[in-house]
Image 1: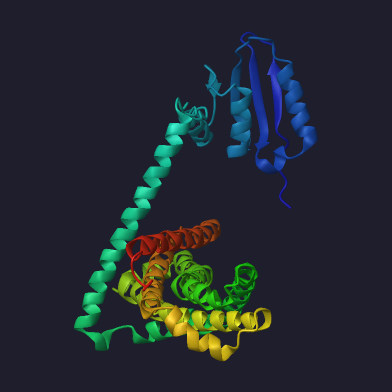
Image 2: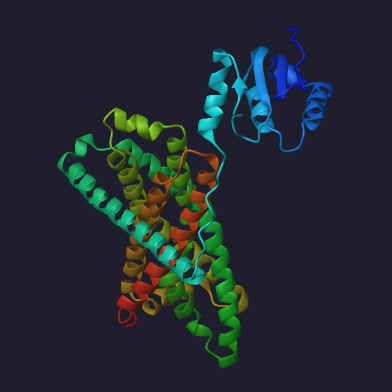
Length: 375
């Protein structure tokens, strides 16, 4: 272990008053509590208001820790009379240039509520423009894909259809079946009161095929596949794979965004068909147990109770919902910063935003097609 001379201060009572420093003023020597106590005791012997001459020529070694201790003893300013070796003078020059740390005063907001509202609108506009830009780039990539389909990312599209569609069959079937059972039981209790048992097929068919089937599939896909897409792109940002792709001349839109958007646009209508069928099976089973409606009567009545237009509206909803979920997930995935905290926040915001946009889109569908599918 290296040995260092103890840092020491000596006080000369001659006129003018002089303080001489000796020894090694380095971090290893300054860690001893006894030496620090002795130095502090020596400083307390200085007369109040006195400006002694400091002689540092006796210092054998100095680092930035020792220089900072002396700088603090000088009240963060260089003494008027200072004797220091040219080798050690650089430490104090840097400390003088750094000056005192002045934190900026927090800006006082006169209208906090207005500032919060404006900030929210600014963030909303920024995300809207980002989604619009992403959609425009998607259209350009689709044009490139249609011009040269053999060079398209078919493997990526197939893999995303498998992950977002096939692997989601289990959870959509379970939730769809349970929703069908619950809806059938609740409707049967009300219809039995008014003697309208036969209209259960109408209520269950219209609600599932037109609304519940697409919405259930979209919400489940947003929470399952949307979060996965955002997390995948976020991890690629953290590991700098996105930057590596740009260096190699591979555009993010053609290889990452377009395959996921196309995959969800293809898989979502198929999931809607699957969810509708399983939900109707669940409702059929509950109707048979609760109202004693036979499955044969249920199947025979269903085509007349639910016009075919509702079926196409549900499939159109599925395609649009899949497109929106993929765009939102890719948008927030590309905006994730290279740290784990941003990855978690981005994934959460992506899921919430995707579900919100799906509900808004469903409301638009309800308004636009309000006169279709009821006759």
